[in-house]
Structures are given as C-alpha cells and as structure tokens.
Picture (spheres, rainbow, N blue to C red):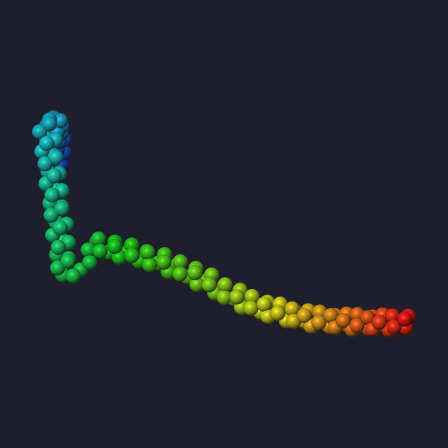
Length: 152
C-alpha cells in the first residue's frame, strides 16, 4: 500500500502566513528604523491633531448654534453647583450657630431676670437692715442723750 498525503488547505495557508509574516516583519522593522518614517509618522500625528482640533471647534460651534451645552458648559455648571453647595453648607452651619446662640440668649435673659429678682430681694433686705440699724442707732442716741441730760 502506498501512503497518500492528504491535501490540507489550512496547513498550506498557515505556512504561507508564517512566511509572509516573517518577510514583512523584517521589511517593516528596517523601514521603521529609518528617519523618514519618523518624519512621516510625525506629520500623520500633526494632521490627526489638526483634524481633531477642527472637529472639536466645529462640534462646539454646532452645539452653540442649536443651543445645546458643551462639555465646557457642563463642567462650568458643575463647578458652580459645587460652589453653591459649599456656600449652602456654610449657611447651614451659620444658622445652626445662630439658633444655638438664640437659645443661649433666651437662657441668658431668664438668668438676667433671676439675677434682677435676687438683687431686688437683697436690696429690700439691705433696706430692712439699714432701717433696723438706724432705729437701733436712734434708740441708742436717744438713750445717750437722755443719760447726758440726767447726768447734768
């Protein structure tokens, strides 16, 4: 029996691919190492950047004409919202401090009223003491005057 070799198109394609890939890999490596390739790649990048800039400007112009916010508009609004939020937080803190101070002021007014009542009470007690002292001194003076008159 003779051995027959089967025809396999996939194997043939794989061999062709490997050979051509090896050849083109070497050719492209040599070309990439040359200076004019770098210059050409730089020009391609510059062209792409110019195209991107033109596309961005055109898009922004279009969005402005149809009255749709651009990315910059949205980022500006976001920063404004953040600023408003921080100011709101500051106002909330101020309101809380003010309400705490108002509560303290109410307590302070109550305490002041108590102090006034205590001072009035002390004042009336001092008046009583002065009255008693005056009576006692008047009584003592009257006794001394009476004794002096009796001694004469």
